[in-house]
Length: 288
Ligand SMILES: *[C@@H]1O[C@H](CO)[C@@H](O)[C@H](O)[C@H]1NC(C)=O
Ligand SMILES: *[C@@H]1O[C@H](CO)[C@@H](O)[C@H](O)[C@H]1NC(C)=O
Ligand SMILES: *[C@@H]1O[C@H](CO)[C@@H](O)[C@H](O)[C@H]1NC(C)=O
Ligand SMILES: *[C@@H]1O[C@H](CO)[C@@H](O)[C@H](O)[C@H]1NC(C)=O
Ligand SMILES: *[C@@H]1O[C@H](CO)[C@@H](O)[C@H](O)[C@H]1NC(C)=O
Ligand SMILES: *[C@@H]1O[C@H](CO)[C@@H](O)[C@H](O)[C@H]1NC(C)=O
Ligand SMILES: [Zn+2]
Image (tube, rainbow, N blue to C red; front, side):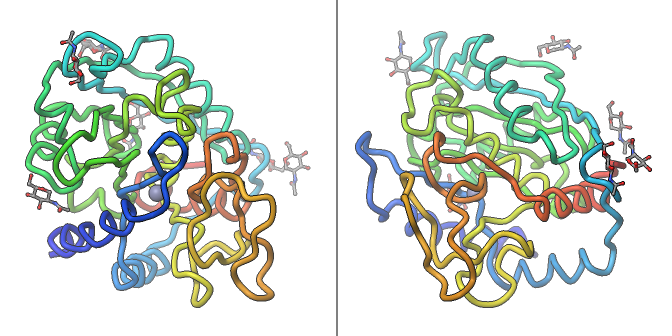
């Protein structure tokens, strides 16, 4: 089934990610959320068939969703993954600020803390460690965002900033639903230039049903959102001017679903807000 092919394809995407040019701090944005063109086609066909509505007026709706943090740490030091409560609180503030205007407001429901040097190091996409961790700790229903912070030190998650499941994955794999992200990507963490909290904004973007802005390159339906101009490839850093697809508008380098630095990311579009509301309504039972 779908899970197997996704697993196989992830290797390809990880290989591509780590071969990209590195930033000054020796880290480049690498999101392990990968979906193949065939899987997107199937997901979009299903979505069009089942689609429930978004709010009619995007500017005056707010639905509150619960967020559960699970802090996986090797030991009780910051470098060992023991993210302090004030950084979790700052992360919640960034998340709420970034989703202003989308109709979502996020409620910090609880934090659990788990000491495991094995899980801290190895919870990569598709790993047995991921399965065990999530099966034991996931909280809430389909509309609860579970966030697991880890170290991505070894195995096939090495070097990632995060990865997420999509709304349409929930029905077949409810226990695996959620976001896994690098502990030091939270505001005040050490993963500069990716320590402004935008890794969670981006991964939560997948969790609410958004694709990368560079999905599909310059041809086809791209990210299935009309007001994000097509982009040939991810943008890194914060390029002053970038236009990789002919006559389709300048690249959406400030969008949360691109790969630029945290300080360069500023917005979701109204089209993304409408899509995420319809995805949440259709697959997570969220009414706007
Ligand atoms: C949408 O809601 C806002 C805020 O309540 C209101 O100002 C605006 O007129 C509404 N727009 C439409 C088209 O109903
Ligand atoms: C949003 O605004 C529209 C138009 O003013 C109104 O009909 C609708 O009830 C409002 N929705 C909410 C959730 O307040
Ligand atoms: C805590 O864990 C980190 C990451 O594995 C390690 O680098 C560090 O040496 C550990 N610190 C202590 C005090 O055990
Ligand atoms: C919050 O999480 C802690 C640690 O897992 C747990 O002991 C507590 O019961 C939880 N509280 C709520 C309200 O869920
Ligand atoms: C990741 O590694 C685990 C072994 O730890 C393996 O079972 C899994 O299939 C791998 N997943 C991917 C996407 O490579
Ligand atoms: C999911 O849980 C939340 C919080 O407990 C609740 O408000 C919501 O109605 C639940 N959603 C569904 C579809 O049951
Ligand atoms: Zn991503």
